[in-house]
Length: 112
Image (cartoon, rainbow, N blue to C red; front, side, top):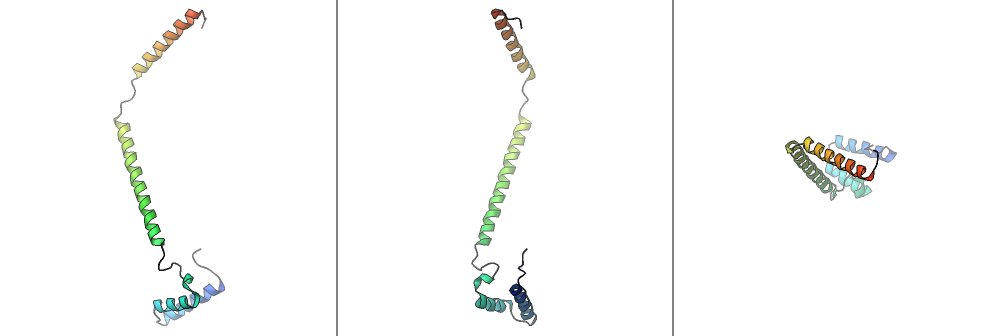
């Protein structure tokens, strides 16, 4: 919830609305409330670091997104340009392995 529903908060909202409707400047209303209740009455202090922090977070997120996009493009290019492994070479290796295994088993006298 972005608003507080206590009795004092409701009274302050009504006071602000009444004073604004009577033509009082928003800066004057704010100055009076700060003088009465202190600077913590503001949602954000004028010297708040929040805008700078949000800008840094947004910048970091943008750079991360750009780096991810760039890396994904490289992966797609590499995948589309690479030749698939030769099936004949793999089968020849398997046949050679099977032949050598059969020879070794025959030399040992196994019946497999």
